[in-house]
Length: 293
Image (cartoon, rainbow, N blue to C red; front, side):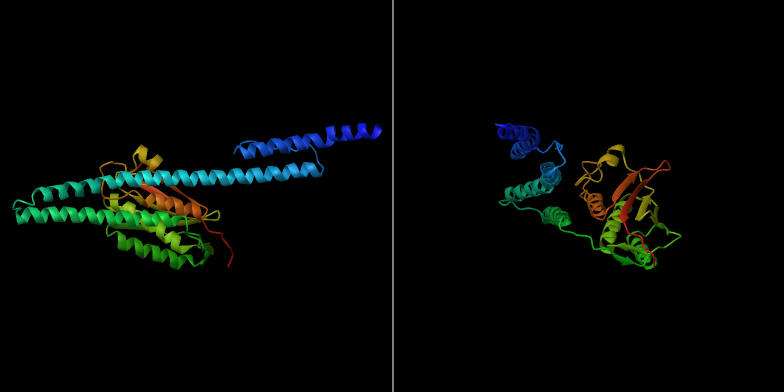
């Protein structure tokens, strides 16, 4: 009788609390509910088992959030892709219908040539758009491979690229100290080229570039003297296919989005601002792992 009472007491005070917790955890996970925390009821083996379940729950929740974020991003990309495709497709459809209507009539050579030129431009636009989509799809496959970089020569390469992309006034500032850093230079160059292309599109007479190293990060800032970012663009310009003007067909709105994604892969981010003196400023930040030579 005493043994039975002791067993009941042992179960009630030692086994039941952690088993109840584990049963609730299993039920929540089975129902795809990961928004909770597991508190260990004891410091013994069963308590440590509860701690292990808490770590597993946290890992599952993190993975689930990343998966949801990826799916949501893909959904938004597909929606934007479909939206931007409608314009060139509609133009092509209209001109094809016009040509079909004129099939039984004599279409003046000048009008036919003009129509074909418009159609060719729209086809080229579709081709460029598909190339942009392909570059976005490959972003998820890119894995940064940082390696030691000699900053002086690398910054000289960036200066040469900037001069090739902008023939107006170019101001290029270099850091005073040039520590040994590790960077994936291919990623940095891709981000820089997108930043320069964006600045060159809006600059009036001047583009200013600065490079610096601060607190284990490499910064590139590109400023232009154009109209600057409107308030809406400051919030959404790094989103895919964003364009400040809906009828702006000069670009696809992918440059700053690609910059953001690549910087985040390198432990950094993209910062946008419209300085009080005017123009637009874009700063790309990369973790660079400063080391001693």
